[in-house]
Length: 171
Image (cartoon, rainbow, N blue to C red):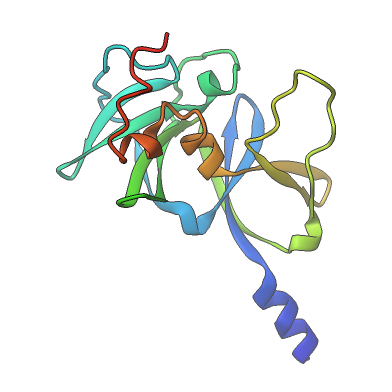
């Protein structure tokens, strides 16, 4: 009985969502909230995957289109499309970023034993954003490392908080 309680307590919760017909997951502790699509104000001279900014209850936050970031076909948003607001720790405190997804599926418990490292896919394949591959019955969900998705090349979103001016104008 105690063994079972330990196993349950060691499960991590992930929010599963759809992106271009595939299933992805993020650590639920990084999810601040899920909101419907709203007007996104474009910002000039940012990478194409940064759709712009939104006003979330008085706070302006950047919005990333994950399909564009991952080099997928940029499709239209559907009626299930939404923005998942992610909260990460920046140098000066919490940093909020919205990510556009095709639809949210569910929150699941995933035991670390169900997670495999990303498979080796050869040279030229960028898998640094992948935390692991979750085996959920017959299906596989790609678990994303949001610190790397948003912070590492995410338009410098986390780094811009530091006041770096050296990475403007590269492009």
